[in-house]
Image (tube, rainbow, N blue to C red; front, side, top):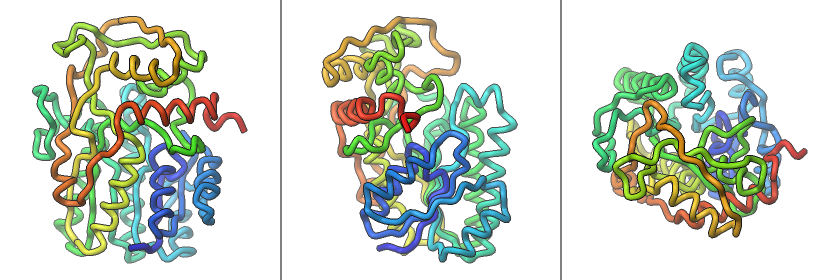
Length: 340
């Protein structure tokens, strides 16, 4: 297909991997990111991996004038929107900031897109928009009822996009709800580089494996699951990147709004992840059981069949491959991007 895509939050974990895949598939890429939880080094590495120039602007989406300047300098055909605050736990402590950044930033972006005649958008949503699961696979039609401010901010944006398409049929929007992105680019050059202590299981496990943290806290071992620990749908970030580019290509011939799950369709327990990582790294990963976290579900995994029907997309990578790539990234970059 090809064209010029603006990637908001393109210096972040998922955004940077999507940039590499866009460039590989013939798109030009422009990145905006306010670097609140990322680094411009990721964009430099995207450029070196692809051998392409990647214009980068340190811009907060709420800065309308700055965003307009980016559009003035580039003829943008489509936007992939990743920018936002994303830590579930932190969202309880900084709720108003989450709404302001995520919802407020999106409203400014949509306004600028409208005035610049750009109507194709792929939005990074989240499985956190779903309500409590009955333990079965989550379909896109399952009840929505996020239980934290982060998830509620994502659902608000989904509702805004739905209303936007209803009011103006010129828009073509794909909302992608994804489960637990993990892994890294096979080059070991880009990956997940959380600032401070990681919130998510995978980067925490890698930091224990490398010796930076002592042990993994496993929240709850009394769930109704095969080994008592929580079960989640982990998806390789490269599979996610493929899904985003397919969604963008799909929108080139479509208006309206499509909402799709991106997941593997199967769940792995916390202990599955730890044991697989031990195999891959050849290192013991100590863990301690601790109390359940409020709001955590026993089981959460996707039904990704609609993405297959709509985009011809399905996840390719195994848990073993997710661990191999995450471990390679961690070994090459023991302190993430903070090395340089």
